[in-house]
Image (tube, rainbow, N blue to C red; front, top):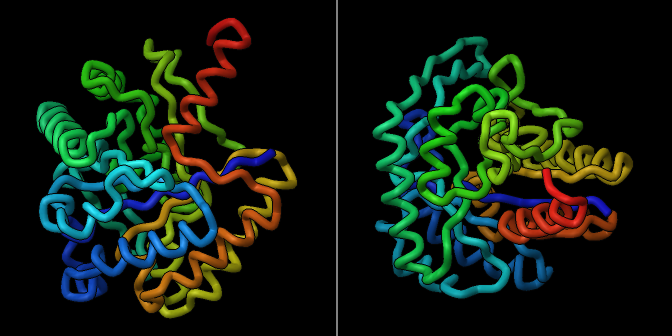
Length: 283
């Protein structure tokens, strides 16, 4: 059975200036939390929130509503949305913008600070990190950053989010893998497949939700037909952009359930993959 992992990057307080116009005057996170809770409870659909520390500090009251909620897995998107690797981002107008990666010491500080903040606020263990912007091959070529994450107790990362053109989409045939070759066999890469939602919606127009839903359903179909797991990336601000009640996201989740996908959090997925590996006698 295919597993669908829907992860939301909760980052309204940290997004780049060129997207800030879409954040409902900075209130998108508040709208998102209320709507996401409603649709996920209605569908009994687990998900993961990858939260930046700055956003958590700015929306503590709203996020408190999800404290201890069984359907919401709280993980890290770093404290300040620092990039792990340099990204050459290709835009719809054909221009390529370079976004430099952070220094390892700054990345370590950002991850450690947010891990402590999330654990203190939600009272749950934070063992996962989604790296802002994602990158080609994830952290396969950054043993130094894997070393940092390992020391901080990180068990899974969502970092493989771009193809060899440094853009979307990422092929579904690239499935979650352990970083054993790099010396960290207990750190799992849970990439995000298909299109980063902001990338596709920027391409077709943010108001054209139907196009994004149709495209996402194609990836769900591929997952089911190939019996592969599918990891999708949405954001707090994009999920409520031109859809405050998140009915389009509800349609995506409902379609996945109708196709027979199992919905699960990243933490539960990590635990299940670990159990399977141990059952086969190791990595």
